[in-house]
Length: 219
Image (cartoon, rainbow, N blue to C red; front, side, top):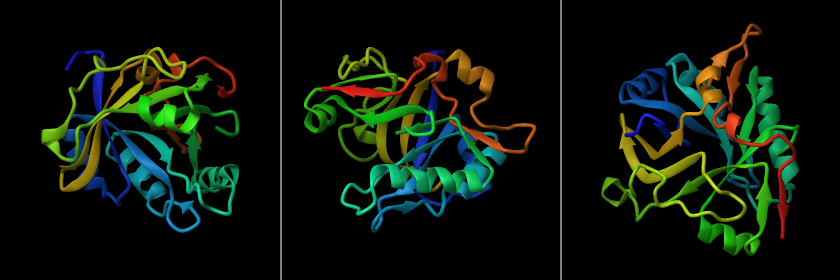
């Protein structure tokens, strides 16, 4: 893998500190942890805080993503509030989320087909991109672990993260595999760490590559 890339994975199951240590020893630097589950009407993920704490204890950086429930009676903002409040109540300082509120940096998980189907080809400003390209489940259906297949869409000219494998086993845990660009901001921030307040800091990935300001979708 080129020096400008590093491995990450995303998961939505409970993971112990020892398993995260195994993951780190398997050359993964960052874990994308689900912070919000689409179950029922949508709910704060019951494993989110423990997974973030365990990953941090194992020396992994952490990012948080949410999978909202579009059919919920709760608005998207209410669902986000539940996730953000749950994290803050556990002394987790959220810098960016892969989806915006509270002046946080935003990242979006999508690909060109999904984006055009959902938004009709709209353009977005001030957002990071986590795109996916896989041929199916399992290791034999991975796409190359690089950004060579990326083509500009939706206002994005470069991605921050790519999901290149889905439904794979790493250290006995079912995960999806990702790569990301190692930005100067991410190197300096150390991805996830304890601040002087003993808060775990989550979400420093790609902050050096997104313009400041509110994310805005333009049709």
